[in-house]
Structure formats: structure tokens, C-alpha cells
Image 1 (tube, one colour):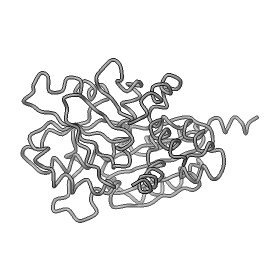
Image 2 (cartoon, rainbow, N blue to C red):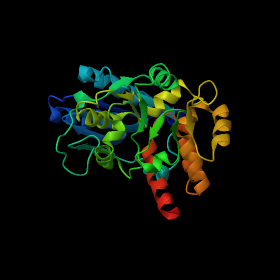
Image 3 (cartoon, rainbow, N blue to C red):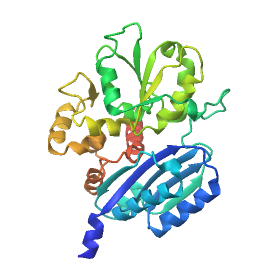
Image 4 (cartoon, rainbow, N blue to C red):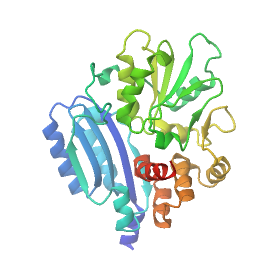
Length: 323
């Protein structure tokens, strides 16, 4: 009975935090000690500029980890912790695909790699675009180019083409810029080449969980005059869809398009609203025949946590095969 209870109380935790870390070695020691004692598995990336973490374990252990981190340093008090309950991975194969078979803690230069080549002027995270809550982001899109058409608004997707092919925001009368980059580190080059499409505009950015917009928005703003008005969706698509579980399909004119799968998405949303965060990915993988029933049951249970990177390798391989 206790074993069954433990399995039902499994969870997944995702968070990032940009902050100047005063003593990185101490933080590394904290993660090694805390995660090991709580038997958390997953991926921890640390730098002098912050942390980027995805770990799984018993729900009570994940909650203890959050409290210990807050007690360790007040820098983490305002962190957006994305925590979801789910069942334990069905078997070792599923656990491996999800990245929860070991604990990997590494010190890195960048939490996310903005560019694959040295930049003439590296941005600082303090210059990142203003955070907009899901409701503020929604309102900005709904009222876009109505009251002040001279302050033209553009929507910039900071994800890679394997994700944007599956689904993205579409707002009537608002230009949506899809860079179609193969990897995030190509985005800075796209920004360099498309400065005229961004200059003088109010730029609203979004990505899956928020972290990719942080440095990308800072990079845009580092270009100076004409690039000051950059805003980003706090918490990414996940937090937006938690607030607007219907994706804006009916009440507003904001659509999160799932090409060829809108009917199926709406049906699934009626059954399990929380699935919409990742349902567009699951539908595509099922249609492609690359998602097993075992994996599907796992993905369904963790859908409220943003685990897009678990799917990207599958989508990339399928996209290459299909040309």
C-alpha cells in the first residue's frame, strides 16, 4: 500500500532563475546535498548568472526542495516554480526518455546558449524585456493596434522551427514573426538580419517556459534606440494556457493554432483542460507513429509541466525524414 501511495505522489518540478550568484561552489554543494538526500533525479544547470532546473521525484521531496532553496538564499523567493503531480514513470525506458534516471549537476557559462559564435556585444540579463503576466499579455494582444495604431505591435516567437511547426499564436491584424531557426543559438543571427522588422515596434515575445525570452529580449534591447520596447510573456506558453485553458479559441480572437488538429485539440481540451500545454505535441507524435502507449500515459500525467524538450528530438527526427 505504501509503495502504491509513493508512486501516486510522484511529481515533476521545472524552474529557472536569473540572479547573480555570490558563491557558485556553495550553490553546487547545496544542489548535490539537497537533491541527493531527497532522491531527486534530473538536470541542474548552474552558472554565475543563475540556475535552470528540471527534476523529478516524490511530490513531498520536491516541495521540500523548494522550501530549502528559498531558505538557502532569498534570491529564490520570487522564482516561478512549475510543479505538477503525476504517476511515477512506468518503466526504465520511459524514465530514460524523460531524463529522470540520474542526477546531472553541471556548471555552465550560459543557462541557455544565445549564440553559437562570439557576439560583438553580449547582452546583460538586467536589460531583459519587461515581464507581462498571462492576463497582461492576453490584453495586449486583444487590443493590439486598435487604440494606438502608430505604436505598431509585433509578436515574436523565440522557439525553434520544430516547435513552431506544431503550433503558435496567431492574432488577426498583428504580424507574427517566426524566425524558423533550427536551434535557439541561431536566434541572435536572425535578430541581426531582421533588425528593420523590429526597430520602432512594440515587441511581444514568447517561448515555452520563459527562459529563452530572457536573454533574447536583452539582446534586442542592447541594440539601442528603436529597440527599447520589448516585452515577454512571464512563465511562457504554459502559464498563459493555465490562465486561458481554451487557448482563446472562443471568447477572444487569439488562437494557438494546431495545424490540421484543431478539432482534436478542442475535444481533448473539453476532456482534460490541463493537457493543452503539451497536447499539440502529443497529437503530432501519435500521428507520426513515434509515441508509444507507455510514453503517452506518462506524458499525459505530466502535461501541466513544460517538458517540450522531451519531444523536440522526436519532432526534429520526424521533420528531417519528411523533409
